Image 1 (cartoon, one colour):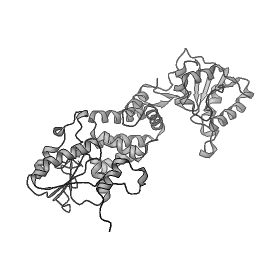
Image 2 (cartoon, chains in turn purple, orange; image 1 turned 180 degrees about the horizontal axis):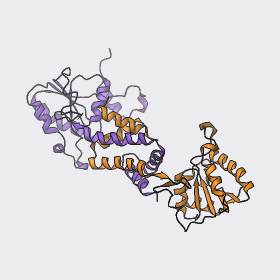
Image 3 (cartoon, chains in turn blue, yellow; image 1 turned 45 degrees about the vertical axis):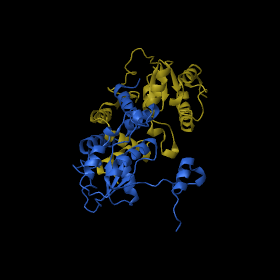
Length: 198
Length: 198
């Protein structure tokens, strides 16, 4: 329908997550009229990301070297290990500035419906990291949804016998929200996990 | 916050129309995990679009040669000229199969608020095309919104004294919308029911 290469661009853009046919078309037309230098920069950064971004050989976080910036930072506490599903969870936790330890990125969560079992995740590598007894506490920071909870439960059962401290992030009301809008499960967890007021 | 090149990618994606920071992040993470070949194909098609897509020297439609496929097609009626704002309007009208003439793409619509006056559009080139009296009817198919109506009115006043037939698409197009989003039947009916511009 469109000139060949324009249709190719619309098709390629339409494969990206959250981009429907109309959005793909809109972006393609924008790019047709954009400065050639701007489009070239986008193309270059796409190629560069694939060329330069690797995954940390220790924790599977995104890295530009063999190890990520967190694993190589001597100021990070090696006795605290936070287990997350994805790279973006690392970024979210780093943004809080609450955590000074290191990470282990599983690469997803256990989800039988998607064919993802423990062997598809970086769990064997987690056990290897724990073998030298440097880590004293493992914080399970998987997503608070079905798959994340299943993964945390699996890891809890596996790690508790090893004699190290295994903790999970607190569930409760989101800060800044309205109590009346919280779902029942969240509100219930907030009750169960209530703490002494100070 | 993110590793340098990942943040660069998020920034570049965030500059695209309709892509907010969260979508940019989501697409970037998708691309991080995508096959290198898929990402390379997207980058290549971006570069190719800028390298290969030109604008027709006659009608300013998108073209891969000096002239577009419609201007060089001898089966298209040279006496009928449809004036549209953008390339995507050509595609929308072609989809109806109602129109057998040729196009003139203005490159936008008159919009004083955006600093776009008649001299920013391909109106001088339109007059040049009309000079040899081949064209018997000019169909004004600008968007049925404020800017499109203003442009059509401007062109009507300019073209009517030239003694050729000047028509506008029939109302029936939803007012306030964009021409490209009209369904084929509506747009086709609007062609059949076009009326003399006043």
